[in-house]
Amino acid sequence: MISRNFKNVLVVSIGFLSLFTAYGGLQSLQSSLNAEQGMGVASLSVIYASIIISSMFLPPIMIKNLGCKWTIVAGMACYVSYSFGNLYPGWYTLIPTSVILGLGGSPLWSAKCTYLTISGNVQASKENKKGSDVINHYFGIFFFIFQSSAVWGNLMSSLIFGQDTNIAEIPEEILQTCGAFDCGLNVSAGNSTTNKPAQKLVWTLVGCYIGVGVLAMLIVGIFLDNIDQEQTSQFRENREPFWHTFLATFRLLKDWRLLTLIPLTMYSGFEQSFLSGEYTKNYVTCALGIHFVGFVMMCFGASNSLCSFLFGRIARYTGRATLFFFAAAANFSCIIALLFWRPHPDQLPVFFVFPALWGMADAIWQTQTNALYGVLFPRDKEAAFANYRMWESLGFVIAFAYSTFLCLEYKLYILLAVLVLTMITYPIVEFYEHKHPTKPIEQAAYESHKKTKEANIITQTWL
Image (cartoon, rainbow, N blue to C red; front, side):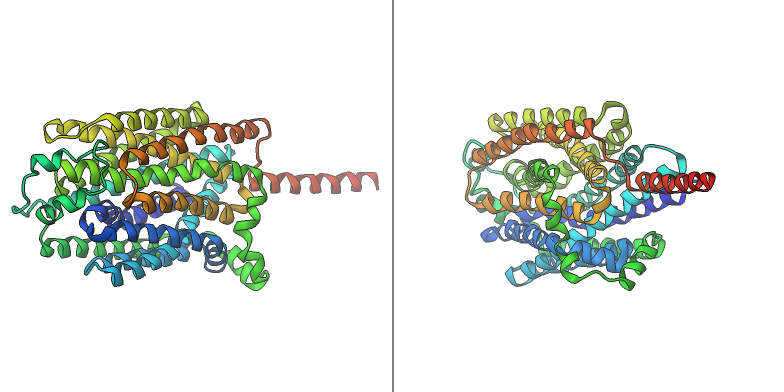
């Protein structure tokens, strides 16, 4: 029999798997499918800009009033709206639904992280285990299931778009513009008309994405336990002043550890946006065609999913720092190679090597950074994960914002610079945590109760 906490982790994971099967597939296609006037990339930039705004105040307010479960359901509804916007893509449909998605994105992810952290600490206290180990394990399971969404979402897009027999071969003059050698700003203009799939197939794909998004809401709404219902009721009965909750995200910025983790958190946004926005457009779509984007991103998703589970399990033996430096080395190698590689259809296996290595590294960035925030800020989980989502989204916004006017070579240099900065600042926090470990909130509360009880016994003995 599995524990109730473990069952809840599975429900959250399967719900996110279903939701991001839709959103992940759409995100991978935006830079290629809606390439006119940079509309697709602009919508992604608006999404993450809205997430930054929502991260400033919405997560603590929604989680404390609705609880984690219903905050997750509400956030999922916002994601489904973006799929509806892609039925008839245009500035008047994509931008408003991007704003809605962004406003729901930060509460969704903050509620998920808070839910897994609470579940991990509760289970650890039951089994007399270290809280950080169980939290790491739970995040590893979540990302193992969640990251496989890239496989299913992209498989759907490739199978559906692959039915279009009118997609032309890539001419040699277009192949010469692929990669980092020829700036990479005009890829979409060169082959969007010949390689864009039929509108009927686009509608079919988006309709499937809407269906799996609604399914995600039903899974969480029906099967997930409301584990923080009592705390939510107490908060509503003894409501804090609005500004106290509103400013919770910013108050945590007084903690120097959080400030020091900003480069690490932003790098997560930079590296994810590069793969979904730049690699898919300037390497895959340019040299192979848009119908190959799904297959290539499936490789990323499969690698990410398996490595998330693996690294979530072995983190207790290797420690976070070892895994972070391993991820940095993998990304560093890929960035250097992408600077010099000129993609060509004859090198088909190479197109899958980069996303496989990127997925392995991203698995570490995702699982270990989320777990690190849960361990460092046990008393301010909602505000901590809101900060995580805010700074990660800022990385997305910056990367998508310069996507349309910076050459690919400079984008790779920027990514490399942020990675180096991350590897300078992150070890400072890790070293401090090693010297001064943060106690889980349940353990601290237990010890406080124990001391009170012992004091009472001593007093009775003296009397």
